Image 1: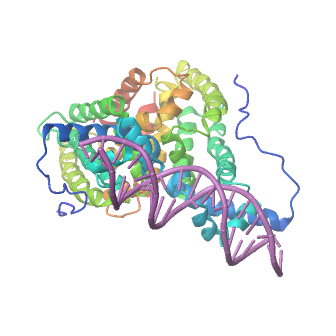
Image 2: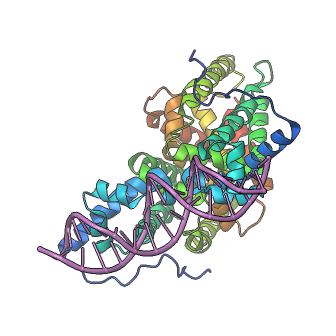
Image 3: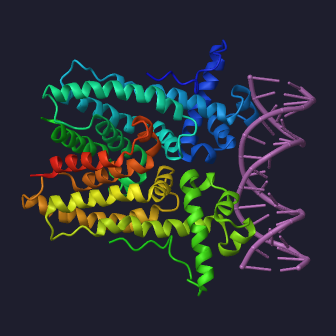
Length: 211
Length: 211
DNA sequence: GTCTATAAATCGATAGAC
DNA sequence: GTCTATCGATTTATAGAC
């Protein structure tokens, strides 16, 4: 078991008024938009401030630095991202549990594309800030789930697949529709990709996983 | 048929000496390393120059601007990237043709991860410079191939799948091992992912596509 | 808390000597 | 062709008035 990463830990949660929390939320919302479009370095405080409807120094009154905004976003994101993975029920019906996971992940690509792209930007560029969480919480969760999946396979309730590569497949296939959205839409002549994606991925994983 | 995009067109290919070509190649090589790690905006001419073993002004003697280096790289990349797609033989055995395509793409993720990440960075951030090629050459190629695949399905030689979503699946599954490399290695405890990936993807597509 | 003004650092690109 | 020096613009962050 890897220790919970010391990095990306919530700092002192100083007591805040309702107004303060609202402003900070407003800044995170703007930061999510800008960081997900441009990556950490491509984003500017000017754009974030303007997106949030604040002046630059005012923004820095609520968060001490550009880094601080970015790390707060990554911290929040990590929870949202690992949630569906934890929702897989080891007592459920194997194929249906994984299909439900796929559908949840695909829905997240549709409903939270900025979050997906924020994550993609961070990882593609070497995960300089989120690496500890990948080697800690994520790896632990995957290890646990791999054991569950191996059990399902041994019981003949799931076709034999490598559990970790199966998870990579779920992640890549579903997140592709958010992260590579512009390419998908270019190829599809701007049609909504999601109805087709859901049908396709349902078929794909059913064929792969049915014993 | 969309016109060949006017953007990203090779400029006047001024006559060059052997030495000039070599230096320009050396700069592209350094640019590929830096741009793929940091994206367009994250890359600096300082880092590219140092990586290439040149001074900054000397680098700008061979390419007029940072943009020029980046666009030269994208132009080269596009060819390399569309090549395996064109290699699919409409007279071949359907399942084997697509499996061969998957293996070629996976091998590219192993052998040219920087190229894959350069592309990923560009697309995730909205493809500001390569969009015309996506709506032009790429879409045309996909349209052509979609017709071939539909023919195979109609002939009962391939399981019924949406041709375009099938291609998205090939792209996302294979490129994931290059683009999300750090995450894959974090989860796998730094083991080489590729032997496992090849086995897994072979199984996945065989199950999906066999009629 | 919010603003204007500005400091300090970085970065793309140019000037000009050799 | 290659270099040192530097310009000019951008950008993060701070100072200080209100």
